[in-house]
Length: 248
Image (cartoon, helix red, strand yellow):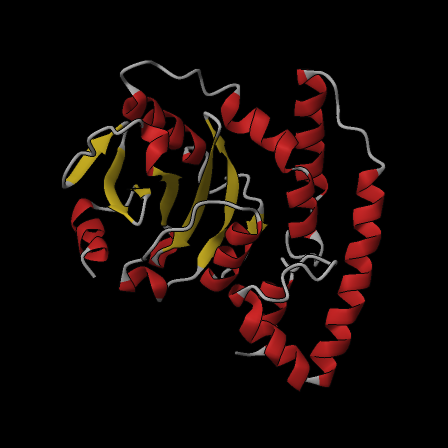
C-alpha cells in the first residue's frame, strides 16, 4: 500500500480513535506506523478532524425543507472533493442529505410493490450521471468500502473481477424507506459508469428478484443477492459488455 492510498482510507478514520480495532483501517494504520511522514500527516489530520467536529456540533440543522435544500446545494458548490476533510463533512451532513435524497422526494413506499418502488428510486438516484452528488469522490475501491463501513452503510459481499480492476468515481451512503443504502460508482473505459446500489434484503419485504439482465427506463440492470444484501447493478453501457463484466 502506498501513502496516497493510505491517506484516502485514513480520511474516514474517526478522530476519537474509535476505529483503532477496525480491520478496514488496519493496513493503513500500519503504514502510518512505519512511515514517519505519513504519521505526521495523520496526526495533523486528526487534530483538524477534531476541530471540525467540535465546530460542526455547534451548527444548528435547518428547520424547513427549503432550508435543507438550500443548505445541500450550497455545500455541494462549496465543497472541494479532494480536500482532506470532505468525508468528515459528508458524514456530519448525512442525516440532512439523506432526508432530502431518498426518504422524502423520491416517493413513499407502495404496499405490495416494494421492489418496483426501490428500482424506480434507485435509478432516479443515479440518473444525473456523470454529475451524481456523491459523498466521497475517490478512484479507490478500498476507500469507498472504508467510507461505507464508517457510515454504517450496507457493503456488497463481492464485486466482479473486471470492476475490481477499474477506478471508482466515489460513493454515497443514504437511506431508503428507513433502511441504509449505499451507492458505489465504477468508471469504465470511455468514462462510462457502472453503478452498484446495495440495501439489506429485508428492506425489500421478501420480494422475488428478477433473474438475468433486464432493461428498464433506458438502463441495463441486474440484481444479485448474497449475505443478507441485495445488489442492483445499473449502467448505460452496451448489454453484452455489461454481461461480460458481471460474469468476470
